[in-house]
Image (tube, rainbow, N blue to C red):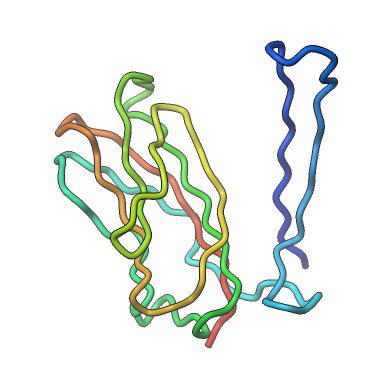
Length: 140
């Protein structure tokens, strides 16, 4: 059974743009074979302005093949139904910043399965925030 991701984009700030919708099947690197493993859908509550590993690549539960295809989905869902668009969580890979997820923002991006390339989250403040996430990868 294939795992797919779909995005639809519409915009009122671009004249003559009618929007688009794209679907991607998550496959193993360089093949048409479906991704075969996942960390599962998880939620993580963060309550400090310090860096936290949300996916540790060298963990025995995430046995990726080195330097192969993986994808991660992360969403900042706020806390107890409150989505604060003024606060962000900085997402990083291997200690390098990737981007900020403000309340309600989400991302999906490719990763390599290198052991040192942990996915991290650093809240802007100590205010409690919850991230939901899932990683899809090639099993070792």
